[in-house]
Image 1 (cartoon, one colour):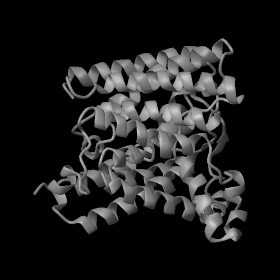
Image 2 (image 1 turned 90 degrees about the vertical axis):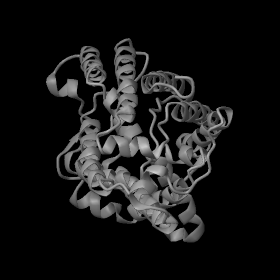
Image 3 (image 1 turned 180 degrees about the vertical axis):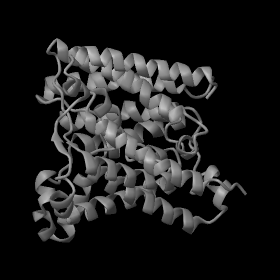
Length: 174
Length: 174
């Protein structure tokens, strides 16, 4: 059941990725060189819908959260390392396999590198855990918990802000 | 747009997929599964290491993420590529190539250079994502949808690392 659900979810997602051009190298590099914002529009629209849906459904007790804990230094440092790799590869972990399936054979080397990266991380995890994951370890905090407001309300406000940002991008012709 | 979807449509469908997936996994697997991809690399890396050196499977990181074929492995390494392949074939967009055209514009026709940078990029995105605790799906889509602080910090890191390097790398066009 677990594998079937994962497979079906991936199948639909891969189809969406390909149709919306999210697998393309030039789209990723276009975003990082601030020329083409399609990937950002894709992500933010997903977050608009996701944030409304998840926070409202949670309000009615239909879903539970799975918030990742905050480690300020590790989040930022890991994010920056990721960003450097992103500029080199031009795909992301979820889309590399899809890019390969679309014919981008450089994705194969990206996946090999990714598996090697995971192996090396497993061997260096104890170092990071001792030195870096201790800095700014705030636990599973969310913006609404920090502000002391209801998640449903925060979800609605945040979605509206992102919607405004997308309208701004369109207005500027970006 | 006859061929290809708007990023807003793709993003909207991805947000719906996230919500449906959380609802369905909560119902059938007892625990909500939020979309994410980089852990899949760790599971597969662990399976590879088990074959090569059984001692490695004692690493604390593989105790945390036990090597096995799980929901995410099925999603990332089977579902997404197959979905993308179907979409590409159906729309006549399966185009085999090693070097993305946009890469060629800056670096020319050098297959070994592209394979090497793709490998290095893949290494860094997975290494960085594991340090940060997630990638654009786990921290970006799922994390920001839950308004989790770690999601916002990590996504900020992606761009702090990615934009300057991309601006330098792809500045020159041949």
